Length: 422
Image 1 (spheres, one colour):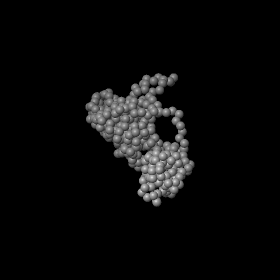
Image 2 (cartoon, helix red, strand yellow):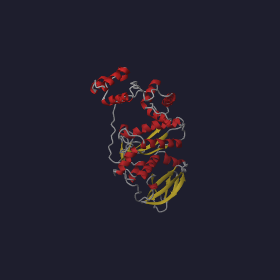
Image 3 (cartoon, one colour):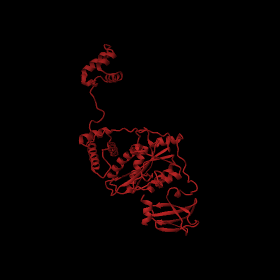
Image 4 (tube, one colour):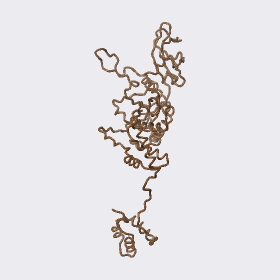
C-alpha cells in the first residue's frame, strides 16, 4: 500500500487523529483508513500528541540516496582494473569478482553493498552473465572427523601479470572442516615439492588417515594397455611413486579421484584463491615468488579465519577447532617409525642400488664406498635435497641400518636430473 503522505494531506491526517482523540473514531477504523498496523499507528499518534503544531507526515530518508563522487570513481576504477586482468590471455581470470571489489572499497573506507557494485558494473558495461551449469555436482561433507581425509592438489598458473614464469600452488585441505592446512608456491611441480607439503602438514597437525589425490604421475603409477609392440609386465599401482613411499612409511592410505569433478571440494577453494591471489598480485605489482608467498599467507588466513564456507556454513578454522575439542580427530601424533631415527629418512627421495664386488654403489655418475656392506647387497639411498643451500644429503641404508651419509652440491647436472625432474 502507498505511504500515508502519498494518499492523504497533512490536514486530513490531523482531522482523523483529532476525531480519534475526541472519541468519534475507533482505533481499528482509523487503522483501516490509514492502512497501517498497530505499531505504526501509535508511532504516528505519539508524534501528534507531542506537538500537534509541528506534526508532519512528510517522508524523511534516513540513508543517503546517492553514492559519493569518490565512491563512484573508485568503483569505476576497480572495475577497469578487473577488465584489464580478464583481457590478459596469460592470466587465469575470466570473470569479474564483485565481492573482491567490495572488499577493496571497504579497505578504502567506502561502505557499499555487493549488489550496488553489481548494479554499477551493469550500468558501466563491466558485467558478464554467468553461464548456466548443465551438470550439477552436489558437494557434501562425507567425513565426521578432522584428519580423516586430506584433499591434496596442485595448480600451475601465471599468478601475476608482472611475473616472467608460471608458479605451482600446492594445497592440502581437511575434508571435514574445509580448513586449508598447507599452501605454498613452488617454482616447479616435482615429487619433492609434494613430499615437502606432506612433511609440513604431518609435523604440524599430525598424521592423517587418508589422502585424496588425482592420477598425476607424482601420486600414482598408471600403466596403459598392452600394444602390438610392447608387452606390459607391470600394471597400475605395481610401482610405488616417491610420494607414495612416504605415504606407505607413515601408514596413510591413498584415495584416487576418478574424475576432475570428483575433486570439487579442493577445486572450489582453488578457484577462490586463484581469483584473490591474481588480483592482489596484480594490484601490488608483484613479480617475485617470495613476494607472492606473502600475499598467499594473507589470503589463506582470510579463507581459514574469516570466510564462512558455503557448504558447512561455518568458518573453517572454528569448525576445525570445534572438532578437536569434541575429540573428533583422526590425526595421529607424528613419530618417526622404526627402524628410522630421523624424519630425513621418511621425507626423502629413495633409490635402490646393489653394491658391486668392491662394496661400492654408483649414483648420478659417482661411485661411493659403503662401509659395512657385502658384495651384491641391496642398498637404499635416501636423498634429502636442501634447495636453499644448494646441497643434497645422501644417506645409505642396508638391512635396516644407516651405514654412511655424505653431501653433494645440487649443481651437478646428473643429481639435479635425478632428484628434481620427476
